[in-house]
Length: 171
Image (cartoon, rainbow, N blue to C red; front, side, top):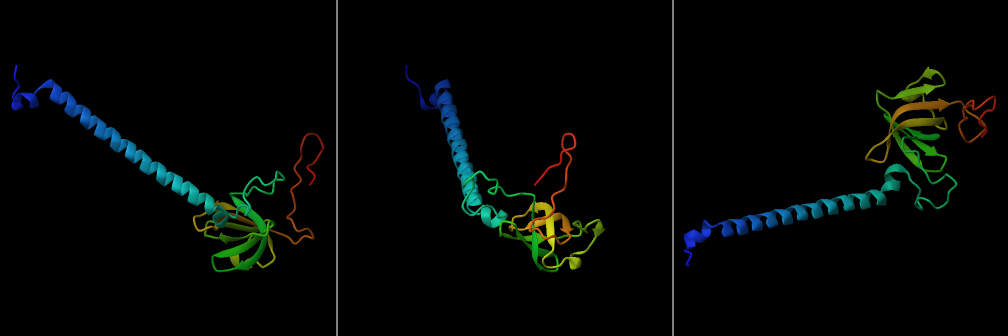
């Protein structure tokens, strides 16, 4: 039983071998694509971790040095003293000593007490609380800026929140 070349190319065995090779090539391409995507994600995660402090003002010595609560950064804002003002941004020095750039837009709400103010009314040494979102440049896009009256304390006043019964939170 002799098979000719044209019969071999039209046989079920050749069709099966050809489909198997095609499936193997597709699997190898998908695997290589997964490796490529995995390396890209790992590189991004590595660079993000290396640049975290520069971008978001995280602890310079790394997280979890101690469990006193000073290691955690508020990712949605900051508290501190105004050290510099510009046209559409200002710089705040936080209680941790890190200076952060705060970007202000038309949508930002600035208030001193219950009075709305503009960025021009903000003065150096004003104590502020900023709620916003960090951007890719390492600054915070402010949504709300509250300016507190000068106090003798280095920290802004803590609101007295009623708890169970007649007890209040004590600082």
